Image (cartoon, rainbow, N blue to C red; front, side, top):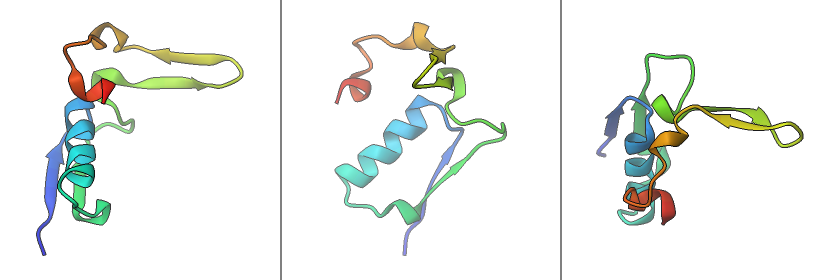
Length: 71
């Protein structure tokens, strides 16, 4: 059985994992995302809650050219 590895948990790795699951029919249990930091998301990390709102420090990267974010 194949395993699929991503180094870093930034938006590219997360989008790649989603595409493997959605388009490749790969089970999530066969996808491994390696992250050195204690938080996921790379430069696209976020924190907060529904009551007080969310802060996304990498929101500057959210542009229409990143098609996977609008899929």
